[in-house]
Length: 70
Image (cartoon, rainbow, N blue to C red; front, side):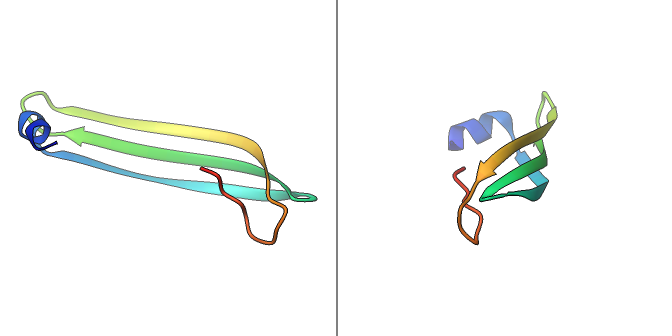
């Protein structure tokens, strides 16, 4: 990784997200998420990229606490 950093220069990234969950009943939940990630490489060829991701789905967690598999 050291040689890669010397070649491309300073690298920064940051990200964040927000999610909403609503219980549908009997352990099933509706999940809505929005995430954003920003990457930047400083150097001769400046590279900046911001990625947005939205997802919606149904999860199953039979207990009192949510079960997260990823």
